[in-house]
Length: 228
Image (cartoon, rainbow, N blue to C red; front, side, top):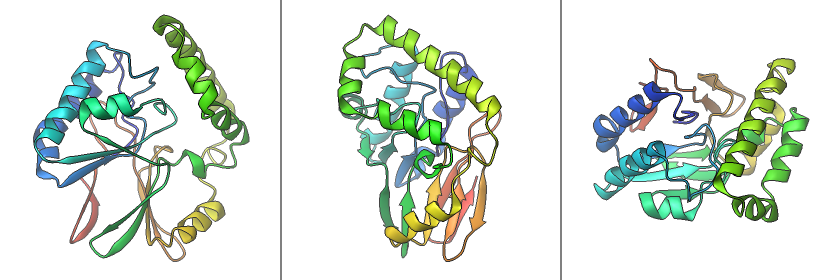
């Protein structure tokens, strides 16, 4: 799953996630959250009622024996080791290869594949610089929150002037990345366009975003892959 974009302004999404964690997630061997679990994340020291709820739900799941893995998204890339320790979740790198059921599977959030969105890629390189992140995390929480809100508003404004093509993955670059990792299946989110694509030599599954009445969840087992 990916792109839940949980926030205090979307209580129905939180209910949907908590329901999943209590009913379907315990039946899994492991779950993978491929970024943007939260609509924004300003640091592991934030202790809002929402973050406490979500952390407790993940901790309950991992304590029961179900493994939980996380790849940072473009909204919650500041989730760090404190969050991981408090929840029992393992943070994976931007690209992670799995060997499951005889298939080599490449996982990522998906934003790194959208190289045609030059402005975003420039912004991404800046905010992923460690010294910038350390400086940001030294600021008081209320200042971080103001900065995050401004960045989010600017992002929403920029989207209105960008074409859908620019905000989608670059197919050639994506194929090269899959070949680099020698994978046969790529799973990613970010674009919010749930679909199973049969590409040249590999399958690309795009996870959808969550809505009040719909949770985009992909199940992988011995029989294959399907959305539930």
